[in-house]
Image 1 (cartoon, one colour):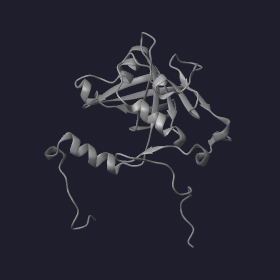
Image 2 (cartoon, one colour):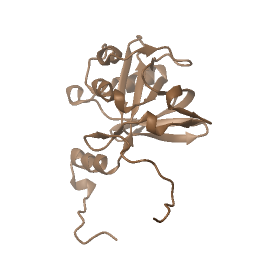
Image 3 (cartoon, helix red, strand yellow):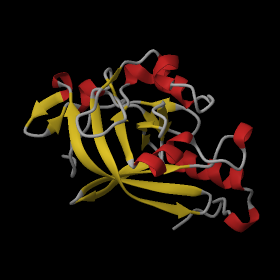
Length: 208
């Protein structure tokens, strides 16, 4: 049962930003989809999204949510969403801790003709099944084709069927398992970021 001193909020009485702060500070940690896409004119784009999860195991499908355009482009949609609508292809990368600054660079607002690979000093390499490039430095990449785009309020859920998966040898344990400790994936909290601070453990825990 909730404590007597619990704070209770009615979303209809809060601003969008106030409710957003409650959600992103509570639904944590969130993995980050580092998405590369390409415009119909061939300009590559790279951007991180922390509303990200697995949508289906069969067919293998990933999902991430794209919010509205930033304040400088109020009323617009983000380049990632535009590109996926037009080309129906993208690559989702897992962000390791050592690429945190590079990822942050790609979260900044740039005009649509700017290639974030250049700004972040990351290396684009050819993907195996889709046109958008893969980040060479990223240890895990999922090449995806758009399954659907679903609008939910101000945001859009992007579902992508996985066509290929690349996993670097240094984070692969064999038998289709990843080395989580070596990967050290970055997670989003509220306004900050974190990695795994304690070793993983199975449940139920053994009594000491």
